[in-house]
Length: 256
Image 1 (cartoon, helix red, strand yellow):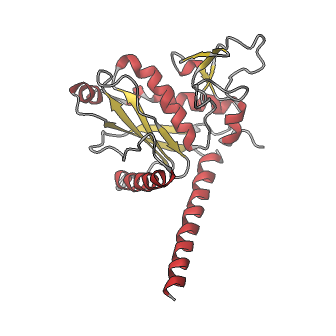
Image 2 (cartoon, rainbow, N blue to C red):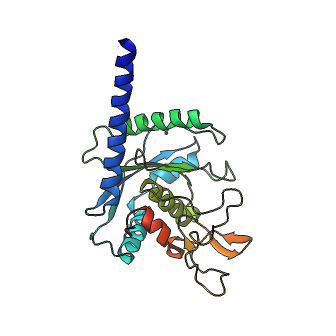
Image 3 (cartoon, helix red, strand yellow):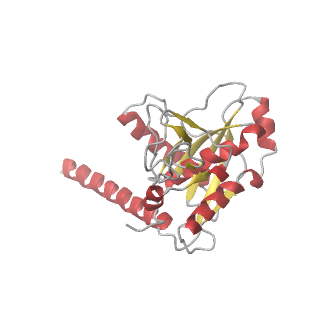
């Protein structure tokens, strides 16, 4: 009897989770109304440089992310006047749970559950509550040479984005934010995990260009601009990024 009850309870939980995942996907990829995104800054270290940077952080630092996504949505014929709205919230006192780079499947599942609980706590009391939560972890660039891996999750509608607490890095920070934000809408990476190079053709902003190299724009889910078969560079800003057709299909801008 108890075994049957436990099995039934587990089945109910899985049904609720699956139903919520479907609702989340429908509400954020149907593009009939504005999708609201909350950007929550948090210090990733105890550096006074990071603290000083966060003290002067304002809405203008992230508006370009909204402008980029909205402009690309309109380019694909999305009819909503404001496809997304990204609002900057006050700095959080605690950081989201960390995920080790070499974590296995079980550890990643536990991390995902912990992240959902963290999201729930951080958004408690916020009204209206944003549909997507983007946690921006700012690092002092003097303390590390490269950033930890960021993550954007469609299931849970949450992104954990590692960025530098530096004015000189703000433009590239926004590229990372836009990339991870589009993950929460269902977009997949379009670069080779081993080399970091954009995959052809979906990772190219203009795969029909002749000659193919060098490209002059980057596909946002591949991040970098292909210069040759073995070389690519990080663009200067979101102005040099585009949403390619494959990504547009994944996030619902182009119907299959």
